[in-house]
Length: 229
Image 1 (cartoon, helix red, strand yellow):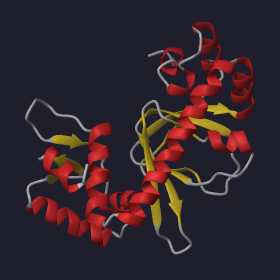
Image 2 (cartoon, helix red, strand yellow):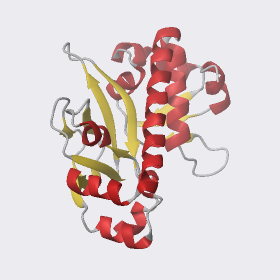
Image 3 (spheres, one colour):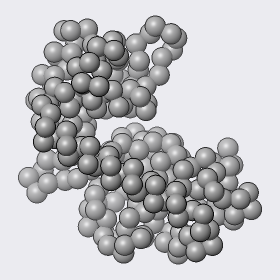
């Protein structure tokens, strides 16, 4: 797919005309990441907006004690890094590749020129930021009011909805993100040991299975009930 056609499928750039998308696509650069490679760290200067072309990355909030929480996993078509461009502040989180990934990079100068020349793009950006804030609110609410079992089930349901697929009807839903137990723990905001115990319980109850690092959702409806959804 041509870069300009890909851009028009990205939420932030859906309002672009064919001419504008071709012009903006010409200013994009490419950046490849290996699995586990950090794109940037919390506190780094923010100079670019990133679009996931292929693969997936996780947004990571690290603690001084070495723990981490991953409030978001981003894949093809998702954008990130716009906050630092808009407010001029340093990066607010780490970004680490979950698998080999290719990113499209839009520098600050071109991004701001794009905004000035496309007033219709402001609303999608505000909408996108609002969704991010609501997602953060949901995660905070879950962390305060739900136990680990329910939080883990909810994250699995979310991952299944966004990344899951079936080879044919009736088959298990596969989440092929190659997530480790450490990754799952950071998504839930729990310890690796807790996630190991939860996975054991879910396997014994026939709700999930694993094949390597691929998660299998064996009974989506029961998993939703466990998640109180």
